[in-house]
Length: 170
Image 1 (cartoon, rainbow, N blue to C red):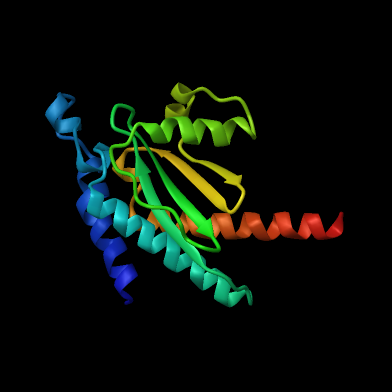
Image 2: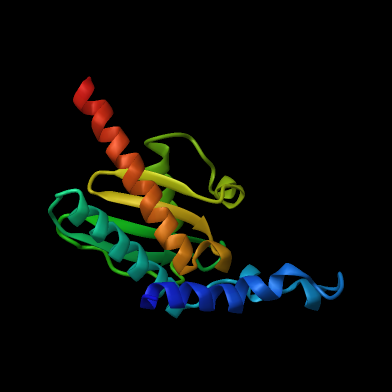
């Protein structure tokens, strides 16, 4: 098995397994690692897995160019984002920075009118803004596991290919 496959199995055992059958309905029994905020290390692992999978898609489809992934989190709002930059990577990780909410809202307002509060009810929002793609997610571990990064990258690559085909046909 590859290192990624081993890591994904370890994530399932660490996070998903304990959340499958709570021992009771009290708070401690329901409070599982899968429902907690991801650590900075987990955010970094997510970003690396997302980047590696996107780079594999780029190489497999004959693409070129740089792809970088950085993570942003708010401080007072449990919201995070993976910022994918195509071309020259100029983004930095921004952890515990509430100013990201305004920047994410501004990018989303270009596409649709969402309030910052409505972000928390949507498991995944992907917005393309210039050479950046924002993957906005609630700051809950189940959305930030490596397996999610691989799934997110695969879904994004397929959607971008479909969008490219539609544009070429137009």
